[in-house]
Length: 421
Image: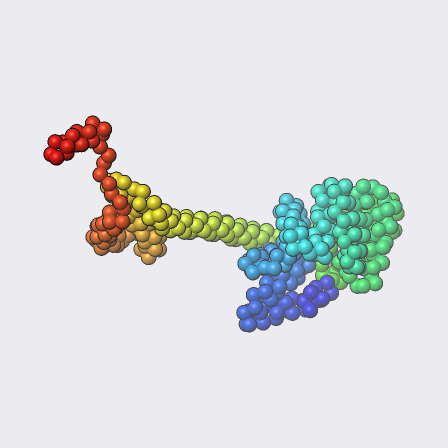
């Protein structure tokens, strides 16, 4: 309901989205909470309250980043791109549009990907890259036609009018604007009426058709005021101000300039900008914390893998040794292997205890040392007992032979034995 009210009754859209948020929190439905934040962001974007729009969108991002689905997160990224486009911060707009496009491609959501393509086309036009804008807009229009999405098809057609206006192909631009205006008027889509009418006014101004230019500019301003769309009111006032300056009508130019500055103050006031920067700063801090948490999680996973590896290697080495124990001939080898095995085992135990003690002692060296000394008090005697036990077992299990004698010694022993006989 909030989405349906968005372009017609923004007050009703706000009330409905707020009610949805309250219900979602009451029943602890985080997905519904994120969707409600998104709807609230949409309302504030339409009203030109960009800081509040960003605030609500970022709340959605927090939830969708943890729980998904990916397509919903990608849509919010695209919405954030729309806000930055309205703020004329095209760098941030492009970053979020591309993040949204990548997410929608991964989610294989062609219907929402269409919106991303259309938005990218609009952005590239604002960046004075009409050829790139044309590619993305035509791609979005094609997807809309394949999906039988009539509304977005005509949004693409309106944007094609903007593109051909910038390319100075005015007859093509007029054709696209008339198509889109006809659809938007029939379906009471006020924002679309604003954009198509103002597009026609700009083309007729270039064609030096004053009456037609004024007619469509007036139509755009009326639709914007009827729907209370601040950014469209600002755009229409800006056109009128420039138009009357060009024909040297200073009184009308001053009037619309004053109206435009009033709307600009509401859209880009110092208070609005300050609030926007605060919201952006908080989001950047959250992203930094998120990246740190992810890096810590990767580090902990690596530590666990290493500990598991050590835990596997120790008994494996011991089993290998037992398998070859009968081939060992020297007493010293048995002693050294037994000692090394026990040292590795006890060092592994100390390593495990260290990871447990750190959080318990809050990383206090004094407490950690005290506890480790107590542990060592019990481990050292146990170490010696186990060493003696393992050593004796290995000695009994192994076939220990005396060191081989030289040929001369062996001959001398043989001779002595013969003399005895």
